[in-house]
Image 1: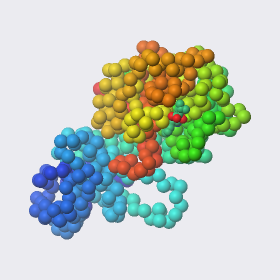
Image 2: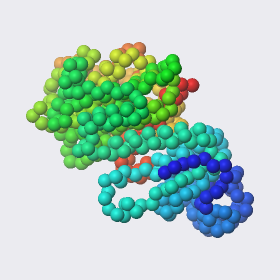
Image 3: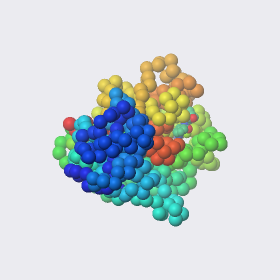
Image 4: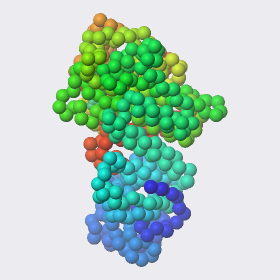
Length: 483
Ligand code: BES
Ligand code: MG
Ligand code: ZN
């Protein structure tokens, strides 16, 4: 689908956003249609509620169809309101087999609204159907082009990059474990890097062990497909204003290992590589936007499987930074792989690290499935990222790291640290475990994306499956560093 900006209404279908209780039509709406639309609006019972769409047949003055798309309450409007509404519009246009339409840009900040609407349109158009072979799917209507009337070209291009990078992450998350394993994930990273002109270094299982990454190796060694360690680098042409490392949990499948997951808990665990896919999506966007910031992407890719060569409960493992880990439960594997990835990231001596991981079910219990847990060793850094997340609409909520009694739960071990901290505060003890592998002096944020990385149903600009959560917030944050 192609989104463009245009300077006037040309298509036969017009999409207009309207808030609850908004009486007058927005600026730019054809005068001649106003009365007619008002009447039809009443007939359709259109109230402007979020998610509500009214389709009005006009048959005059150029436009044939007018879609009114609800925004919800006027005092609650944000950029994300428009992003969501744009996605609702696209889904409806597809359903009605409309292939081209004009979208009237609402009043307000031209740049940010153009960007948000572009993102909503592109993200809303996505669904994962590459494995469907039925004819019905082939005949599905494809939207040809949408025009944002009165939009900003520059903002549109940025929105395109962000949305397409998020979609790239989604598509990769949606690939099952029989297609994407640690080896094929590393190959994809290399392919992407070549396409974008980024540096990419992949370490195989031999090199992983030689480098002292016993933690990643232990988690991966039970699988028939050995682990891989992936390092992507973007360096700006000019002098870098800052240096940041993104680290993603890359479990291409999490069966739980010897502490095998029961029943339905194993289902959807192909999504346990969501953090890694977000990192690749971020690198894709950064390569296109070219900020004056040095950006690294780090992924420890492994498959957590039970077998005769699998790691076990009671095992004691040494991570890359020299600290020892006692295994309480092989299903708390993500933090073990991240121990090496964060140690490696620290050695790059960045000023900041952000890791993204589908780390704990406990985080979903605490915050619900739509909000990521945010953990940090630097409140200012957290505030900056939270501000960006407000704009991108990606929900994050900070959880505390200062509960020293809770920290003791991961210290009750024969090693330096235990890989679980008991039933209560499971997301927090997991974050405390990770902190052991981040060098002091580096500002660090951990995002537990176990909930929002996957969507059980279609909603606004999400489709069923991988969401690509984290890509837009992290990229926007890097762009802030470039200001
Ligand atoms: N990948 C899971 C966490 C997860 C659960 C992500 C549900 C997405 C949805 C992680 O590796 C895991 O199994 N965590 C355990 C930790 C426990 C054994 C301490 C969990 O959350 O149950
Ligand atoms: Mg697990
Ligand atoms: Zn996992």
